[in-house]
Image (cartoon, rainbow, N blue to C red; front, side, top):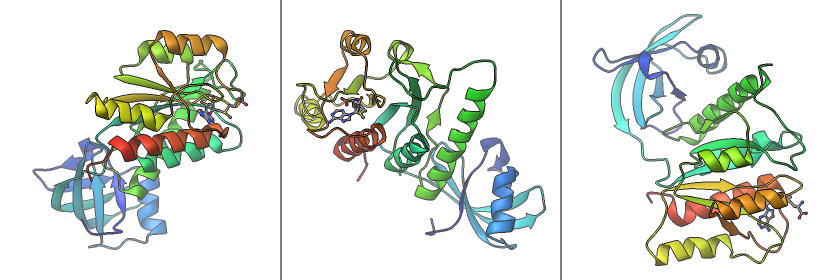
Length: 259
Ligand code: SAM
């Protein structure tokens, strides 16, 4: 696929493989093409179906509401990590949660679960006021745009905030890693090394990072009961978003990528 060609995730229903056509109708994507990029007929774009298929296309018609393009070539992208990491992260003050979302997406997170921990300073409850839903929509847009920018094959999924207990109860992961500061626990890299030596590398990992106030005693006990691996990220106390990016980078670089 050509480098730096504009990329757009589109609804698979808008891709007609047999007719070799793609229709972009999302308002922000049409605005991006017409107003920001000032696209012309014949310009190349890459459309992604979100499952790994990428279509090189040429624009064939432009209107205020939609852009139609002809498919020139199709290929399978392999830019997503082999290991799936679900990041459980507290909501954070002052744009730090959204910063972490964007960076985690670039590094290769598979999904993100916002968690209302006992000591969380910022909380969003999944209620009937629509607040959680509009937050999730905003976060999903951030993840889509970051995925387009970093040339991922898929968009990480994000859900409404949940409690720590629900998180542990509903997790389908093969292994759970809980970052625990100020504790005599193994370093994350040593845990990963142990998995490799025993040939038991999990392919789906739940990575938990606590809030500004850390995990509560009862959350720590619940993590131990759930047989989570408590890990250290070193002797310095990192902010939650730094801990998330540091831990995710270690996992993806140790066991994540195709090459
Ligand atoms: N209030 C806590 C304290 O002072 O002890 C610090 C919490 S820290 C800002 C936020 C989260 O980042 C922690 O709950 C933990 O999950 C993770 N974290 C930060 N530094 C860490 C470290 N050195 N090792 C493991 N986890 C760490």
